[in-house]
Amino acid sequence: MHADIAEKRQELTALCRRYDVARLEVFGSAARDSGFDAARSDADFLVEFRADSTQPPLERFLGLAEALERLLGRPVDLVERRALEQSRNYLRRRSILRHATPVYG
Image 1 (cartoon, rainbow, N blue to C red):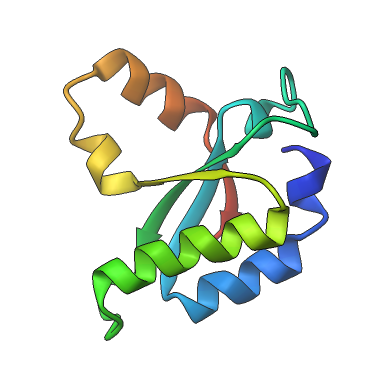
Image 2: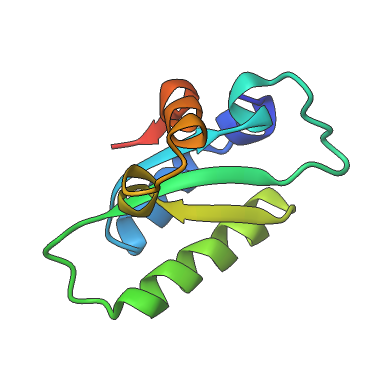
């Protein structure tokens, strides 16, 4: 995991609690720490929200995405884990799931 993300683990945990996240994982170059350009790269995250959340789903998703961007100071691609697991693109799905690194949960 790239140091920019690892250094903010406590803040990431607080965001996950605030937005009822059950699990947050980083993938892509930020997980591998290779090919990650601290000045230009975005951060890719898989998210799974708690099933018992009372927050509206859209507010939860967009709120978390915006909060992650503010915290990390870079664009964030947020993907729901369930959507990826149901993807017909098995090569992409398998690659992402194999290299996803837990951040929370």
